[in-house]
Image (tube, rainbow, N blue to C red; front, side, top):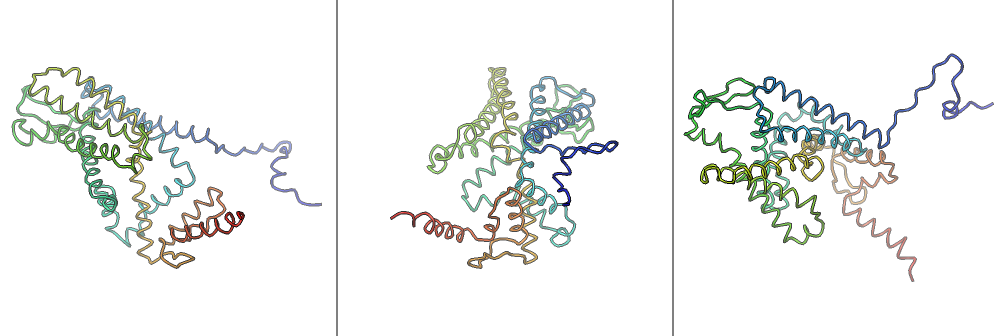
Amino acid sequence: MTEPSEATAAAEPPAPGEPAATPPAPTGPRSVTTRATLAGVVVSALLILAIVLGSRMLRNFDSALLPYAVATVFLAFGVAYRYTVWISAPGARRLFKQGWRSLFSMENFRQAPTALPRMIATYLGFQKFLGARSHARWAAHQLIFWGCVLAALITFPLTWGWFTFTSGTGSGPGYEMRIWGFKILGFDSLNLLGWLMFHGLDIAAVLVIPGASYFLWRRMKDRGAITGQRFAYDLVPLIALIVISVTGLLLTFSSVFLHGGGYQFLAILHMVSVVFTLIYIPFGKFFHIVQRPAAVGMQLFKYTGRKDDEVFACRRCEEPIDTGPYVENLRGTMRDLSLDFDAWAEYCPRCKRVLRGSAYLSHVKKGFK
C-alpha cells in the first residue's frame, strides 16, 4: 500500500480531537490591496500624530494651511499604499531586499566605507547618470530637483506647524526661527539672511521654472519623446510644477508691488495646484522620487560585486555583462516569475539580439517559401 501524498493528506479532514489545519494565507491581489491599505492607514496616522505633537498640540499650527496639511496626509497614504504594492511584485521585492541588505551590510561598509556616501551624492544628489544621456537634460533635472528639495524643506515643516517665525514686536524686523517650539536662531528681516529666509520659496520657484519649461519644450519638439508620451503621465507633472512656481512668484509680486491686489485669487489658485500635485505624486511620474533611494542599495550591491572581481562573462562572446551576484539575482527574479528562460540573463545584450535573430530565421522564416 502506497503512502498518501502531501496533497492528499492535506485534503483529508483532521482526526477527531486534532486541530484543523490552518489554511494558507491569501497571496492574490486582494491580499496585496489589504496590506497596502493597512500600510497607508498606519503611515497617515503616524503623520497626523507627528503633526499634533510637533506643533505642540496644534498651538503652532496655522489653520490657514489646513488644506496643505490634509494633502500631505493623503500624500503619506498614497506613498505607503503604492510602495507596498510596488514591492509586492516578485521582481521588485527581490531587488528591494537585495538593495536594502547591501545598504545596511557591515561587510560592504568595511570593504568600501566611502561607497555609500559617494553613491548618495552622485546617484541621488547630482544624478550623474543623466549626464551620460544629455548635459541639457541633466542641468534641467538638477534645477527641478534642487528647487523641489528646497521647497519641500520649507513647505512641509511650515505646513505641519513644526517650523515657525515669531517676532517680539509683532511686526519685526527682528524675528526668531523656532523648530518644535525651540529657538534655533534670531535674525533681522531687513538683512540678507532675513531676505533669504522669507524668499526661499521664490528661489525654489526660480530654479524649477526653467527646468520644467525645458522638459515641456522637449516633449513638444522631440520626436522620440512625442511618440511615447502620455498627457496625464508626462505633461501634467511639468505643467503642475510650472503653475505652482508661477503662482508662488505672483503672490510675492502682488504683496510687494500691487499692495495685495489679486492676492486672494492667486492664493486659492496656488493652493489648488499644490494640493493637486501632492495628491498626484504617488500615482504618477513623480513616484520615482520615492523609488530612487531604494535603487542606491542596488547600485551598492553591484559595486561591491565588481570590487570582489565577481564579474560574469557572456556565455556566447565572453564579454563581461555585470557582477555575478547581480546576474544570479536576475535569474532568481525570472524564476520567481515562472519564466522558463532564466539562462537568458547569462548573455550580453548584443548576443541576445543575435540569438533572437537566429531563432527567427530558423523557426519562422524557414516556414516561408
